[in-house]
Image 1 (cartoon, helix red, strand yellow):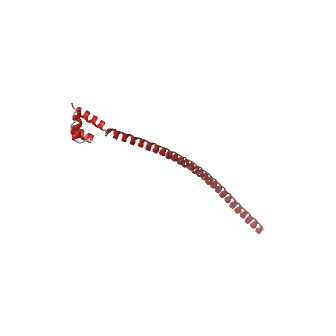
Image 2 (tube, one colour):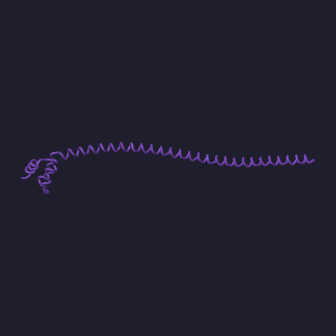
Image 3 (tube, helix red, strand yellow):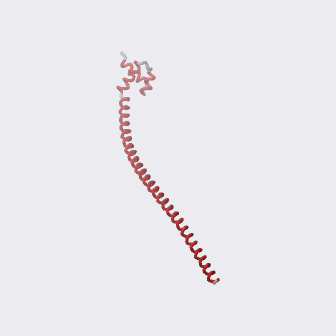
Length: 139
């Protein structure tokens, strides 16, 4: 009976060892499942962040497009204003170079005590022309 007790003990020890291995693998499996669940949660969180970033990027692109359209419209308006101002400047230059305006400027300046040289420089006329205009008006 020694052999049968020995065999029985050996089989019991083997069964305990196998049971320990099964429990060990079960514990490892639970840890792996927990790790896998954690990784899946992080992956979902990462995907949500990526979706949020994509949405923000899309909003940025739309805002940029809107701003570009607004800038193009402002550029057109600015060009129109520039054309209008150039037209006004040309009209002012025509007016300021008209003989009547120059004559009035010279006479007003002369009455205010400006010298003939100053009036000549201011009106881009020669000294003789300025003197002629003043002489025509002086009685």
